[in-house]
Length: 335
Ligand code: FAD
Ligand code: NAP
Image 1 (cartoon, helix red, strand yellow):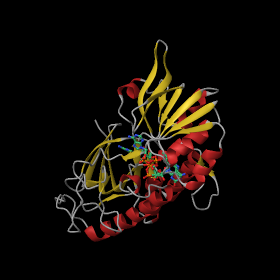
Image 2 (image 1 turned 30 degrees about the vertical axis):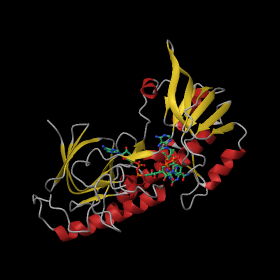
Image 3 (image 1 turned 90 degrees about the horizontal axis):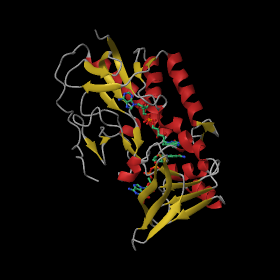
Image 4 (image 1 turned 180 degrees about the horizontal axis):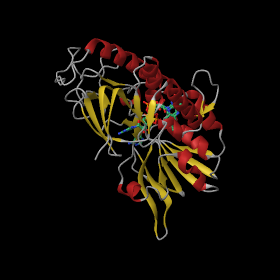
C-alpha cells in the first residue's frame, strides 16, 4: 500500500531555487517538504569553482550545495531523497506521485526542477554515450588522463569544461560553430591563454568515430559550417556542452511554456497560470540562468506561496484549471 504525505508546500527540486525556497518557506512556518530528484544539489554539483556566488570569492559547486541543503534542513525543511514521476494540478490539494511509491498531496507547489544538458542528437553521439561521450567534465574528466579531448560548444559551460579538462588531458580542442564565444570575457581570457587548448571555429560535430570491441571513442569528424569540409580530430573523450533545456516534463502539458520549454510566470513573479503553483530557477528563466538568480526566484516563490496560502483559506478541492487573468500568455515557439 502506498504511503501518503500531506504538506502545505511541496518543493520539487534541490538546486539553489529549491533550497532557497525551503529556507524561506520554513521560516514562514509552512513546514515544507522538498523532494530532491535524481540530482541532489542540482547542476552546481557538476562543476568545480564557482566564483560568482555572493559572499564566496571562490567555492566548489558541490560544497556550496551541501551547505545549502544543511541550511534548508536546519530551518526545518523536510528534505526527501525521491523523484516525482507525475503531478496532478487539476485540483487542490495537488497530488504528486513518486518513484518511491509515496504520494505527496500539497496545498501549494513550488516547481524548481531546473535544467538538463542538451545533446546534439547524432546517432554516433548516442552510441558512445558513457563510452567516451559525456556532458559532464567534472564527472568524467578523470578517465582521460594524458589523452586528447574534444569539447563542443561556445558558452560558459563549454569554456569551463575545456579549462577543467586540461587538468587531465594532454590536449583539448574546443569546437565552436561560430567565430566568437558566448562565454564571459574572464573565461575567454583564461581559455585563450591556456597552452593546452586549441579552438576550432566555424565547425560542427558531424560524427563520433570509435570501436565496438572494446567500445570507445577514437576521434571525431567535424564539418566546416560554410564549406562543408571535414576535419578529423583524434581524441578519446568528447564533451558536449551546448547548453541546457528546462526540465519541464512534469508540467509541460498543463502549464504554458515559451522560448523552448521554459515555464511562463506572471511578470515580476513566480506565479504560474495555476493558482498556488509557482515556478523558480532555470525551469522558468531563459535569460539569466545563474545560481544567484535561481536562489532569488526560490525566495520569491516561497513568499508568494505563503501569501497564497494565507489568502486561499480552505478551498481545497476547488477546480483550479482556470488560468489567472494576467497578460497574454506567450505560446511555445514565440522565440
Ligand atoms: P538545478 O540546479 O538545475 O536543480 C534542479 C533540481 O531539480 C535537481 O536537484 C533535480 O534533481 C531536481 N529535479 C528535476 N526533476 C525532478 C523531479 N521529477 N522530481 C524531483 N526533483 C527533480 N551558475 C552560476 O551562477 N555560477 C556558476 O559558476 C555556474 N557554473 C555552472 C557550471 C555548470 C557545469 C553548469 C551546468 C551550470 C552552472 N551554472 C552556474 C548555472 C547554475 O548551476 C544554474 O543556474 C542553477 O543550478 C539553477 O538552479 P535551479 O535550482 O533552478 O535548478
Ligand atoms: P549557453 O550559454 O546557452 O551556450 C550554449 C553554447 O552551445 C553556445 O555557444 C551555442 O552556440 C552552442 N550550441 C548550442 N546548440 C548547438 C548545436 N546544436 N551545435 C553546436 N553548438 C551549439 O549554455 P551554457 O554554456 O550551458 O550556459 C547555460 C547557462 O548557465 C548560462 O546562463 C550560463 O551563464 C550559466 N553558466 C554560468 C557559469 C558561470 O557563471 N561561470 C558557468 C556555466 C554555465 P552559439 O553561441 O552559436 O549560440
